[in-house]
Length: 154
Image 1 (cartoon, rainbow, N blue to C red):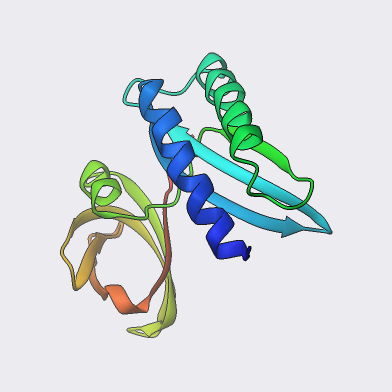
Image 2 (cartoon, rainbow, N blue to C red):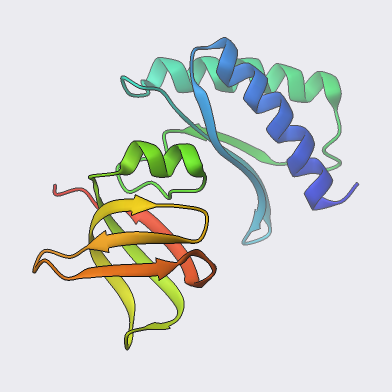
């Protein structure tokens, strides 16, 4: 079974368990990190994820993974919050983050730059709009966005 198939099956299980615990699955990835396989599950909920939430999802998911037994080698299961500096990945993330500070990196320069920091003013299927602290507004085509993550003032 390939890495993509394992990740897909694990994502389906993680999504069901997270939902049952009142959380949403933000991301699930299956990666080889320095020779050790890791199944990383990131969960969130509106009022914040607690250690108890992570523990409950981890325990239930671990049991289901053992029963389904589709991962052919040893791995480490990690369940956590996406953190303050979470990556924005889908429409729901973008909608939730309008008005929030973000950090954007692009694949190719946009008006001579590849990094932008400011407020996410809006987005659509084709582009996102970032207003920097000096008031300058950048409309960045989605196909040029390498990553976008929250950048809260701490």
